[in-house]
Length: 233
Image 1 (cartoon, rainbow, N blue to C red):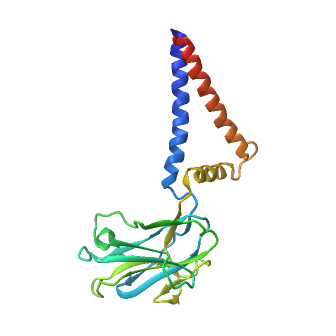
Image 2: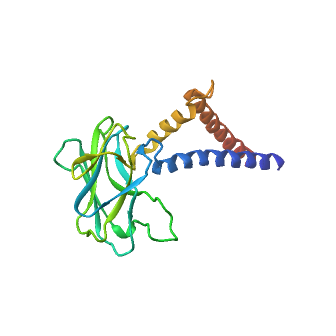
Image 3: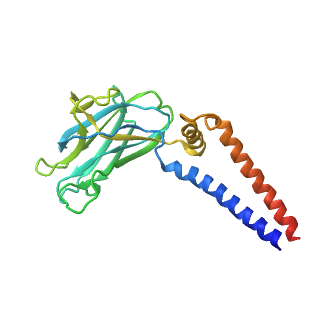
């Protein structure tokens, strides 16, 4: 009986370990482990009506599928559509568009609020995006000059790979943004291994080391299942 209890205990802990590893990889499906971003901000610029505020950037990976911006509104009255456009640099046709309602944006006049919330615009993954330069802009045609929307940016050239523009004219600064990529389960696994081995001494600097550990866990799991089966018959 004690052997069965011991086998149950080992099987349980091994199962939990494997489950947590797999759960972590699945959770990473929604995370931006590899981002193209410009996180700084010191200023805000208003946009309304026909005014367009945009930014160019270089995609670091394939599967470009999301752009997140620090957008805001001043007060709760503006519920106009906010339209996002994405193109390859110098192209004349949109690769993707997305629309949200201004009511979703951070209200900078509210005392009780969570400030600096990124608003994501998602679209179908662009499989060959790696290394390409893209340009996006946002607009809110039905917003008035009396009740505009706002977007945060950093003054100066803090993102040399791209430029900020207003109505197509380059301005001094870079928008605050995050770029997301659809990597999939296998892509996230490979990326996680890259992060684990980065700047570590041997053997922790070897991907084979971590793969071997996982194989050992799977082998132990299979052995424990067999042992438990034999003890129970």
